[in-house]
Image 1 (tube, rainbow, N blue to C red):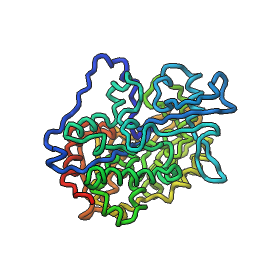
Image 2: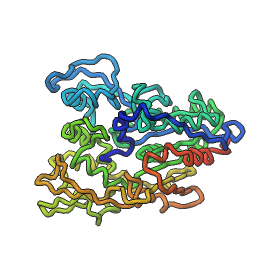
Image 3: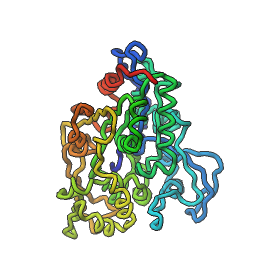
Image 4: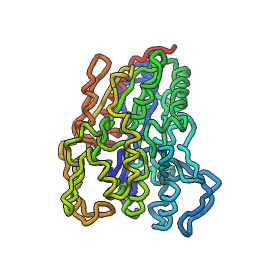
Length: 428
């Protein structure tokens, strides 16, 4: 968050690509067979799964291709970084969401069809952020890649014991049900348990933790007792994050220097997931999230409606109201063994307040950031919300000095995941 609840610097690494080699961390202390490790299903965060699309549109910007009958990469496609603003406008036109006030739902533009890349359980959508083999070599493109390799080195196999259940991260968790995501989740868990004859460990990063929590809280206890070994989250913004609000002020170029900021501002603010990840109303009610200096205005969570009026995007307030009942998350209702992992940086590098010094509050670069304690993306109070539910079924683990997404690349985290997976019960 620019918003990046995931990776933002993919293309910034391109200039030094030839100087880098990919070092895959290994975990030698665990073995899938002898340690009876639980099979794992990985769940990604925001911006961290590949999305494909095809379209037949009307009213598109000039020079845009009207029709594409084959599935084409929409996210993350390197073309958006190198083909200029005309291509970017066409891409944003297809990738943005529209909000229907009558149904209170977000959806694709008429004529645009999207899907998450890969078949059910495939790692292809979230192991890397791009399908392009060249940009896959960039360290910041390798989202789950290092973890996947570490797990495979310990005996896991993508054929049966290591899967991913990726989702269209533009939408909030409750909306995923409309795309049969949770139905597919149930099916995948049952397939993996049946194939491996072991209960399944669910490992979720960032918003993936909220997605998976929503899934578990809506499953019968009998089913969870039968199929789930444990649930592990890392870097989950249980109470949202101030960084999300920047998407309505400056947008998000995801670390791509050639992206047109105005185009990205108009597109990213349409994503329901961004409204979903705004700071939770009660927890942040006394925190100044935005200060508009020329107008002498300060905005807390109590001022969301006025904020969205001022940034000229009132649909954003309606979208927030739609997802507000999801919070606060009742983590004592998960019904499974729960491991909550959080990290924090040693320096203040997590946005807490945005001070706008420009005459207009949105579409500006005149913004100062006041940082607070956190993992660079999520503040500490949101990360540590799970500590309110400590019990025999809730385990808290902190790793000092690691960044929100960077922890996924670390051997110490891979090792911890293995320790949680160890000693899985047989299935059935």
